[in-house]
Length: 295
Image (cartoon, rainbow, N blue to C red; front, side):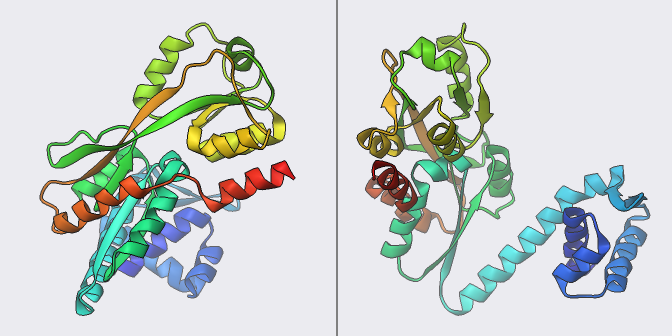
């Protein structure tokens, strides 16, 4: 089965329209239809149904999606690594959760690419489950998260400690901050359980998000409070845009780096992991925001 057939299937899934999928793939709509029919013939099932002017996946189509994604991703990874081998380069694929990138991985990636020569990198944003699966399938070299990965094939080591501090757009005590526009940010499984214990009597949060940058932008624009990394919040505290909440206790979240125990690029992974010590979590975007707010 040609990999183009699976790419076409995923593009139709994304667009929910044969014509737009054809435009994105630079092929005719007839070619898209032919590839989908080829796929349906191979699996002897219907993958899409038309609902008025929309296209929807059948239950069989929904089950095929993760397999198609894995096949395309694996073959692309293999193709890239084989091409890189010709130039004696090593590719390392790095992934982290959205909050990990916001906290410090963005700058860490800059440090890595500057200091290591002869390497090629790929950076992705994935959930913990996606990172675990990708490492088991050997399509991910390094995963960084707030929770260790649970698999006998994967090694997880603590590489950093992130301090979270409750900040607010106005001077408030903890009780007021939690009851007036509080934004709950998902900082991992352990944080969720500890947060439930520490703030058991608080009302439901005004907003929930899995992204610290969303929380930061929201409280800067609309007001409110949230737990954010101290290094990210510090410039805004200095510029007077945010305040530390009175009476709050900081939170310390361990950061874990995970990789396959039998990874082919184990020596390179170890070398890259050491560069976390040189990471300063501030990004140019964060500093720019804080600078603009102080003008």
